[in-house]
Image (cartoon, rainbow, N blue to C red; front, side, top):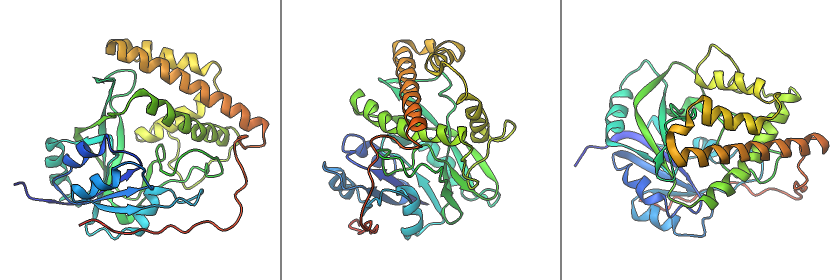
Length: 311
């Protein structure tokens, strides 16, 4: 049996019984695992317990903090290093060996992991989806997810998805890939991206209105991958015909057609997603920065608490 690696894993979850078993199997080398659940109605909690994970319940107050930041603030991790893993992601044995070596280096406070995204059973290697760098391994006391001033938009979910970790100190890159494959059907992809488009529309709105939060990762063409992406987004939000442009960029310019039928479907879905963002941005601009679905929250908000019912 392989020895445990002194890393604490944080898994945000809600109704993930289809994905969670494979995820937890891939985390057997972690010293401890926390599944932070949002009152799942399926077997997510039972599966987590069966695999020996610690289960924490998160109650979203509708604003801030969201799930990952709340977990980083409130869970008593016994290790210095935390690894953030979504339920539809897997850590390979080769990546675990690299993580084991990486955390012994005092030179870095965090590491970017490269995701290999699978869609309809095929690795989406083109279209700009690979490499896909995400800061997921870091010293948890000095890293927190940024707040992009989107908390007044309803139906965006209770978990940070496109926000990035703000971390002090040097950050490195690991070579081995993390796998990303959702075992659920396309209905869940569409439902999830409908929520994401609410969030993205607010981010676009903030950029256009110059309401960016200063406590975020900046936009810099010559910076790291996240900063370059932010720089390009400031240009992107002002371009016309973005749904068509997104399809052209993904499918033709970034060679998404080389991924076959799955690449074509993915390109079409991304174009549709961009259209959803655009119409919701239009709604924000004509409703004083609010979506019509937003309702006023009255009364006191429920405090977040957690109960550790794992091993």
